[in-house]
Image (cartoon, rainbow, N blue to C red; front, side):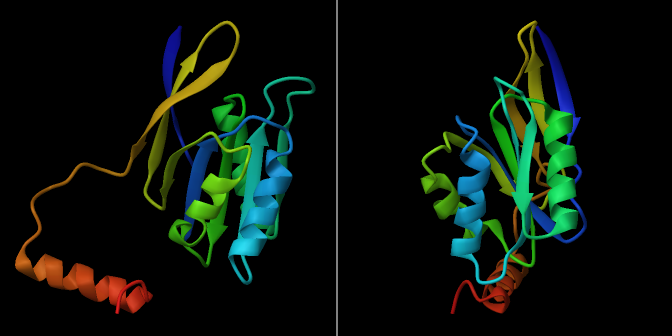
Length: 160
């Protein structure tokens, strides 16, 4: 077995959701999940098929987001993994709906941070072991940091 890290390419101003599923129907069901959960979503979804033709299946509403999802899925090459690349929205708005999709087994991360995916590669193929999401903390938040965090959440409309 060989361990590798694959750095995802997240377009500027975008977020991703990386997960594991179990069936080729995933790409269509995740498309339906996204267009149902958001009023005008801009996203692409790509799914690595693990058997049969073993294609990277893709769909979405935005050609650039679809292309970004395709490239990331191809780079990962891990069977039955999927990635959603989205802009003009946040994972928090769709994450529970994505988790409730019948094919979805696991979510590894939902982020706009730089992401490295830790892959195990065997003779059979590749599997995702985990992710490195962002960078380590540099300190404990101060009272001013708390104030800024609370203001940010209110500016986004997540808190009143």
